Length: 224
Length: 224
DNA sequence: TAGCACATGAAAGTAATACTATTATTTTTG
DNA sequence: CAAAAATAATAGTATTACTTTCATGTGCTA
Image (cartoon, rainbow over all chains, first blue to last red; front, side, top):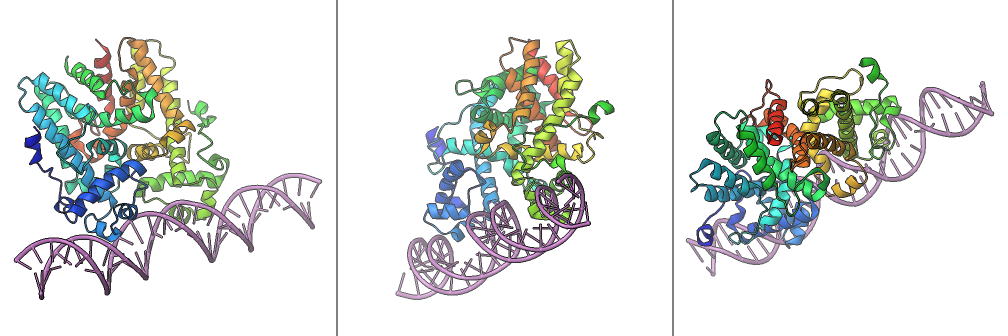
């Protein structure tokens, strides 16, 4: 698996960047430290100026890679969903039984993230935490419809679609496959958020991942 | 019902405001037009300066009611959840059968919002749209734990708790009542958002409210 | 009805943000 | 080694999110 992944590059919509950050050492440093800093400061307090100071580089140099911090967030989130989709396809592709396949799919998207050594400048655990705490901000904007047309949310949508198709395959008469699939993906982020900040609103915890809850939810919904 | 409601004032945590906007005509104008403007511009582009211009009042006067626009959002969202809780209790209180009660509860929180004439300066339909599009921004912040301790999310948490208790009553052995309750409340907002901006990710639509989906989801989950 | 409190308005000021533009310097590469 | 490309340094702009000070108006109350 490691060998396979080492040659993989996660494709990100090239409208998210001015210059591909994967194409230079500075670009990779920008991505690497933006993840660390957004995780530390939160997206709202994170600025290109602070990032420049931290990596010993100039603010204006960062603008040559990303138009603004919103686009950087779109880049990071697209990368994350692309990375997760890869795990998803890899893990589910060879499973023939539709129920097992769906079960594995739910597991992949809802289990805790672990570090992937294949991408040394990206800390997937922290990036996941950014997704949990900041992802909605990438689409809860007045520009969401334009940006959607420009393809910034393609990977995420494709993931929801993949899950909904698995549901459909297993139970063609279930009337809400898309809603259920979007609930699993979005709900997973929300449940992780609740574990961190509103533990009384969830039954998940450090020991009980959302996987248990969503597996139960999905299979009870379609077993009728 | 109108007579009953006319004497009702929705209680909002008084830390959200410096001076109670319900206490003066200017305060009410601020609330009324902030809802209209946040709906038009989105929360991110909304500023106290613009609001001041719009209501023919000075920016500094608005600051005498709300510390900043984040606190104003906390005020508006708390008002909304308080208002919804009132409908919730009113509608479910007299129902004896636990299944009917839960069914009604899901309906109240997930059906489309209609104007309530009891609060003339508040447009509940637009406020609901603000909740759908902006609510997460009120808690996806670095200050969430402090603000949670200060009680800014009490009403929302109580609503989730009320739903989870109804689930528990109907099915004490169901292992995820809190997660399911939070899924219904948060998921409803998300499904409405998807209908507006990502229709391919949901089976809900203008004709099919999230109520249908969540009723099915909840009752299938606990009927085991 | 004078006067005082209090609400609101007007205006100016500050620090930070989110950029843009220009020019200088360093690094890469053909 | 020279040219091109990348990066750094510096300065500048408009906007935001406030804060401060002072002026004005309005309504109660003694």
